[in-house]
Image 1 (cartoon, each protein chain N blue to C red):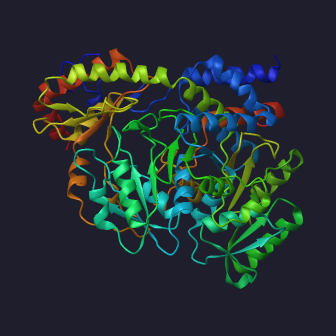
Image 2 (cartoon, chains in turn cyan, brown; image 1 turned 90 degrees about the horizontal axis):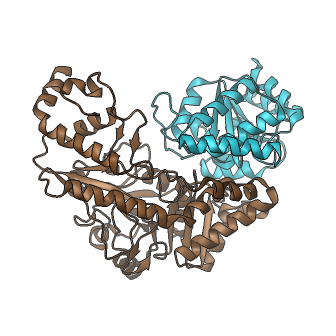
Image 3 (spheres, one colour; image 1 turned 30 degrees about the vertical axis):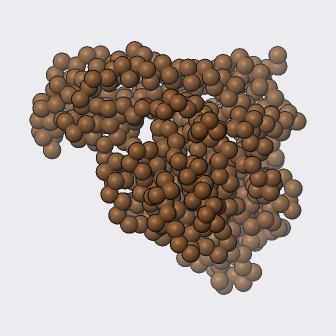
Length: 225
Length: 395
């Protein structure tokens, strides 16, 4: 049996021993903490699925201006999320309450930051398709940049990216209030304080997804303390 | 661990009875070695689709329907089904208030308005008689929710919906195993929704599924929920929420062991029956044993003579690591929401939300735990006057 399979079996034997399968268990907590360390960000909120994560991120902002400027190439994940969050794509920057940047390319990020600055609004970085190993450092640099960091980055954690936590996703944010809103939208498990949200979305990451995510980090030798 | 005086209650600083809490959740643990075999398919990208397909086929056969569509969340299974079934141009969804605490949020995500109705006094569920007065020209859908114990009158609700020309969706989350008149839950209405949350009968870590007889609805739901082909993403209301294969592996193993679970649940239920028999303070809600049932949940009604409030009783039990829960309390029509709902006074729902208690059950609970809990309930009853004095001191 391969080393990887042995590692997987071991982590699942422990999981079964603990009998804690979801609801923000110890593996989900540990995974969030490791991602926080890797991306040098104050808050990571793990979610069961990338589409749900992006919808939650848009919902959490509770925008007054319901128009969104999309920077970068067309992205159907964003279009779907806009529909569920009852937001509308708009080309005229003056009407927008949010900028969404498709991906992590420097030119797109620059464009998103410029638009956000002009409109005096926030921007979200959409990495729901996952990121490559080469892009990890770039993501860190955008998150720690004190000059207009994204309000949130939504990153897919699936086979399309370097960290595969089986179909899941995470939301990175430096904003503690926003993080707490996201935790409350996700479910009551894992909240640090109860805050009012428009509606909840049941987006819990399972302990199985977190287990596989932790092993992915180990295999990549990233985030190993 | 026996308590001698109220001072020894964990709530007042004493030692907890259960260091590892016991809960009302199923938390079924399937055979690990068999799960690990299935897990190998889940780890292989090329085997993931096959695993999910196998689960869907076995679930469809289990519920006696041609179609099962799995997704990563039971909550979103409901949202998608509502979206797919609601009549266009109408915006109200008739649903019980005495139900799952997030069901109104589910309806709001679908862009519709929850319209709450009363429950039947016998079944504690929405019924044709409780739903009918709320039907109007704006009714887009009826959600028939099966209660915690036994089932709603699914056939009656189907007839009502048909006669009114309104689609009906069933929420069968608590009734995976049950039959109604010998017909499997999962095969009623336009569609039925279920959850793989670890607390449910089939533990898939997380996830959900939809069953339906309709080829057209199944095709639409698959297009809405699986956006592998980009063209499908353009459908109004699409959301890419496939069931993770690792969750499918867990659910599949649980499904294959479902008879073992039911046997275990039956032994727990029989023991509660034995302990509650003859009690004038407590009443156990009975399963209808003329039908197939999972015996999964244990619900107790606190009698008029029970000497503590239900909420105080729960507080004491919870502090001891006995994670009892109030039965759907507060009901949804009494909750504050940021979205519109249609609510009227629902006196029986409000009454029922104050008197029932979900007791520990599921895989982690055995007969010994039932005895410990019921011995403790007896002790609470005997020492209620002293306990209430302690509470008065706290306040």
